[in-house]
Length: 371
Image (tube, rainbow, N blue to C red; front, side, top):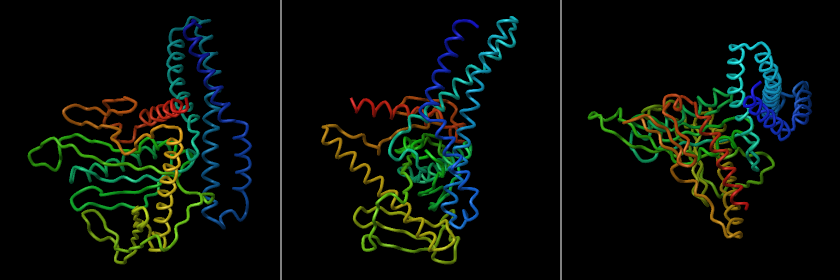
């Protein structure tokens, strides 16, 4: 094996050992074994919500363990492959080994990023809300494109998605949408997507084919758990019921089952209309409201601590990424400067490069603030 390949393989081996240590693979195996016992309990599904959490967590841990085990086997096998190529002076085997080295480097790097998610809520599921902003019908169409982008991203990873609310615009697209990504670490993974996303393209709604700039906001909050102390007194909310709407504003439900909850002290408004009954929609809407209040509480606490330290907090309401489809093809993140000309791939959910760069960037910012 040449010295360059040896050095790269040794570096990958060291990175993987670090990942295995941070993840605590032995503890993961013990936790998975405990969850397997819980999943096999006869009365598990007497409480469907608890059962769903147990099976979801077990599935996630089993997947992560398979991933780590597979990477360790491949690193060890690759060392043997390089030695075999050198011993037999086989150019084809050497080329295969070098290609696998590149692939392993990328996959171990992706796993390493997950170890950077150590915030207090990072391990939770995520609630994502998309709102059309400036740009008229192009902005509502853009909001629908972003909803598809994130749901396709979740599908690529096998993460379940539950859409709580889709508020359709009169012309095309969505005024807003709220959905949950039901996977461990979903909040930590997606929290960097919070902000304004800008689209530049030839408008499909303009008869003169003029270029149009439109904006949509993405809000990401952690799902509330039973241990969170989020109290919402009845006298602090206003509950309105209305008829669910479909594309073009048409009614899709003959009963007033959709629910809108307004939190009077903060002005936060949430809606849910995708469940079948008013009771279910109200329960989902309260989940979303509590999640938004939890995030507001977290931000206030962070601002208070930063103020005591004499620091300034980062504004999350700013533009974070440009998607340019005309006159050239480019998606560029304004914080990490990661960019790609593969706009079709990005809009089809291939956003891992941006998500991983955001996680690394956020960790660097946190480390810089701690100094």
